[in-house]
Length: 313
Image 1 (cartoon, one colour):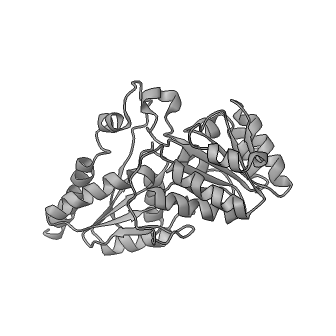
Image 2: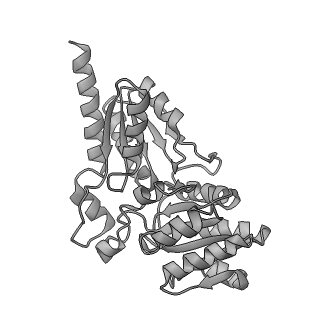
């Protein structure tokens, strides 16, 4: 995803002189293309995320569109005060990019796990929160955020994520993408869990269950209408995210609680506790027990069985 992001940003910056890119002493093998092509618009601000965000806010006040880029929680947790007070309060054109969301940097330990970021950022005023599920979505979202006035948060995977869409897929601000049509159960994924969710849907199809798979690209603004459509047209909803409580599952549950009288619902996500071991992203997902295709199918089938039992009584 990060390669798709930088490719699109370079293309946009070639047409828009306002675009700037700042990093925190990282991004080697990824950001060089922008730095070489547009050296006067690239800044390595060092390991100083608070200063980076403050500089970005100052340039945004002068009419620039500034992308800040760092690993996992560094561009969020280390400088949340500057994001809240300098960027969001003033509704500035600063786009905060976190690479390696979730457990992508699992081998680096808890300091590099981005597992609370969407909950934190979705509480900030004026801030758009987006998380693409594949490189195609990443390119589309980058283009939208560069043109959108106001602050944004873009949560990317690390590298090597497969392309799950055709290039012709339409990415729209605040809208989910219907990836697979189905009528029995709805699976809603955000960010890097899309591939695993599609695998779960394939297993369900082999068992006679047709799942409607949605990629929820934007947590803020949330596609409330599609969530409500899913609650009315399928037997239940399962959300899938590489994040602790406070993210997609919480947001979807809030929509359902406000509007729908009764909907079967299950949120699959990380537990609300620090992961105190290091390991691969896949291994740490497995340790959590749910963020695998088998966990998705089990949750979906349980909702369906519960609905069928109630219908017989």
